[in-house]
Image (cartoon, rainbow, N blue to C red):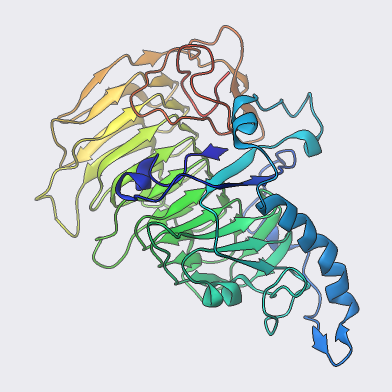
Length: 440
């Protein structure tokens, strides 16, 4: 996915960071079948080597050199941004994995890079030739402007990222290959990955584990981009802190699936005002695919695909703390989404809502209720038709692009639509915006 730099989308609306100077390109493997709960515990790393000695680097680190050199090539901006964003991403059936460049995010040039590898050592300085072993160690070393590049492999143990960037010098945690960096939490923390820093990007990780919840941020101006978060007893992805005073957070291009044990557990659960929830695919969750509550306000929820969620597809509202219904969830744009085969409503308002919510050109099919059920907002352009996916499967192994003749092609609106789709294809690609996460 190509995500506009800070200042161009969502969290960037209050973030005056300069235009990007470098492009991190993440080569993506073919999408595997989504694993079952707790599946990512394999590929355990071996013992942590003693990295430095009087004689220099030991053989384990010499092996890591090649791996981290490849990461350096990725983060030094060797892919031209214009050509990457202009070329449609080939289908997995027509191009080998190495030729597919699915996950990209434009970042301001970092002032420092730290490297993490399963063969590293936390006593190392985190350089290309001497990476650290854990994301937690890199997070402790990070300062504004740091980019942490994490090599492929499995990292067991919950992650906590506390350092904050600034508007002009964000901190970024970037997986070398989308989905090939597996964070497997443990029961030492409530969340497998907890971010409390402001101006932090988390990009391209596979997150699972026995924790209650998956990936959460309590910091503001964060961007959660292109991650796979799955199999948790609670929420997959969430935004929350004790006072619900976080704000301006983007949740873009993630897959959030098979989370929750009851109706209060959701795929994506946001509780903040400001930002974007776009290009996500949320399915198989016990509650809603996308749920906005608590202090949720002024969000754009656009071009998502939500299906097979037990309670429903998308819900917008306010209730419980901190406002307890005294503040309305208002000024939302909910546009170009596809809601299919959800247990109850496809899209609805709930709790306290305002009159300025707009629900535009959403496509519904075979939900418990295919109406857009509103308290105070307005809806137009809603269609109730089979969206015509290339291969719709409720277990997540399907192809959720639109096939030729789909009623979703060209059926969207510019309002709320992100500049690219989940694969980085420019939107619109042929004059009119498609609905859903993929642009033809």
